[in-house]
Length: 116
Image 1 (cartoon, one colour):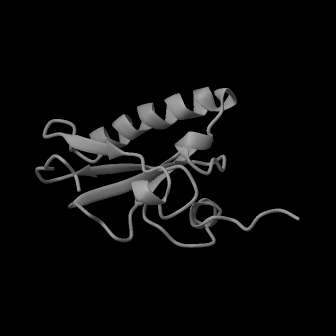
Image 2 (cartoon, rainbow, N blue to C red):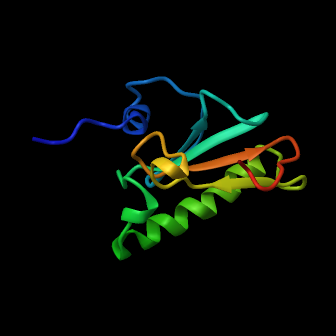
């Protein structure tokens, strides 16, 4: 029996609506439903990788593509010149809420350090 689809797999399958910013064969970028900045987009691999700590060497191309496309999406959102933050949460204490690897693209305001 296969595992239930994650929220992000359901979004990729168009079972749950989302504002899509970018899509190709490997990744999907969409607006976060609980934004923490004026611009808050998630970019996820279509391959279900639970978290970065569970990625394998076989995922190297997907992971590289994910980061390069995150930068491309940030440019398309107009936040490249002012700056933005990429965040990957791993595990409960890291703030992970969906067990599907995703990169948060945050921008549109000054982001302070440390984040919290």
